[in-house]
Amino acid sequence: MWIANFISRHRSKTAGISIAFIVPALAVLGLALMSKYDAQMESMQQAQVALESHYSANPPNRVWDYQGVRISERKRLVVDVHVGVIPHATFIKTRNGRIRYSYMKLACPKAGAAVHNQLNSETIWINLHFHGDVLLEGACPKPAAGGMFTS
Image (cartoon, rainbow, N blue to C red; front, top):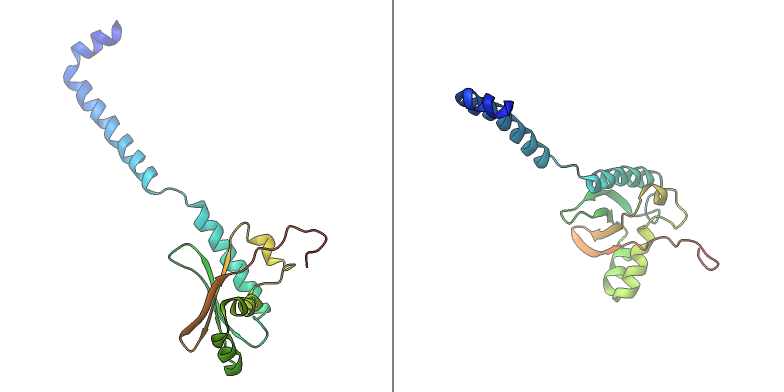
């Protein structure tokens, strides 16, 4: 009852007060919705740092050139590897898909590498190229969960 009396006596003030409270509340709500937290992107950035430190210590196939790790437009972790040895590049280029994939796996981290513990569930994509020509782009196999016949 006292609220109804207050509103009827101060009708002009209540409109101004309600606008003064509603506008900032809507502004805060809008900002909160626009700046949503992207947990997947943060996890990918952490995985990118882990992969960069792994590949700087362990170059792929010992003779190929590690170019860097990037997050692609499709939200993939892509490791760029330049095959600098001409016989390797021509051999990979002239083989079928299954053999090319087996050579691409040489650039993947080994199954027991510590970097897999830091990757969470991220998939590593390898981009093999030779002087600008893409030889193959594919996903590294996930390490096995363990078992009798896993390496």
